[in-house]
Image (tube, rainbow, N blue to C red; front, side):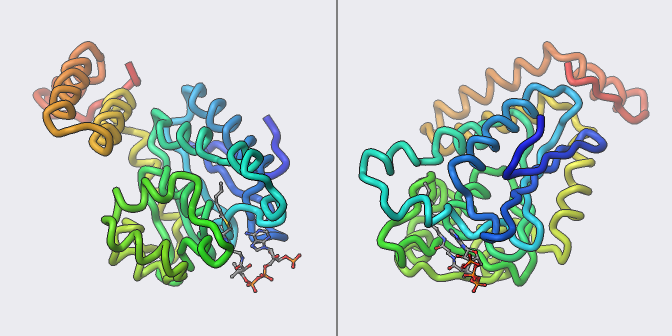
Length: 254
Ligand code: HXC
């Protein structure tokens, strides 16, 4: 499928989704977010794609497109929300990595928060400047940010609207890896993950995501069920047999 606001390419079982509105620093408008939703449907259903990277050339993105929002009524603002598609990305059954250089602000950083991992340059410019526009992050940011870095640090970023460098974001745990070339780093990691057993990755992701939502005992019970399900896969048999036979496993995704 071809898109107007994003570019999607697949290579070596890794899909790279490029946010692509460079004239407005990749600001996310409704069309771009709708295209992200379609792309994720397509990539989720494509068995050749094992890992997805979201990135932007020079800049990840400078947030939601402000020109689209200025005159919205409350009802229209509710419909403008990116959350249904962002939730789809957060729940994507494949690993999703954000590769960040330049600006990653507001709704763009909220998109990165939906990814499993965030790799950024030390000089990336990261923040939630919505407060300076008279709003606050409305695409899951008030929920995902405190879960990731704690309530106090999340409040500090959201209340002040401060834009911090990638290395400061790394110190907060908002970014998990620093790299001079985040896309290259993400691609190397993605190719490594693409060789891992996909069902185990998918069910591990379900368990870890559930940890944000449920109490410990419920989460541990959910983990036990998902863990047991793996013993119905040929990849589990292959992984353990390969260990015993002292050879490298070959996973087939079943
Ligand atoms: C629309 C944007 C934009 C945005 C940049 N542009 N960010 N257009 N929406 N979020 C446009 C500029 O208007 C300009 O267009 C061009 O991109 C280049 O930007 P400049 O401002 O000239 O660049 P620079 O001086 O380097 O400043 C970069 C910047 C600044 C610091 C990132 O552009 C900025 O503050 N942008 C807004 C960031 C922001 O507030 N993001 C949060 C949005 S609210 P022209 O035509 O003049 O060349 C949000 C809510 C999410 O994300 C919730 C959604 C449901």
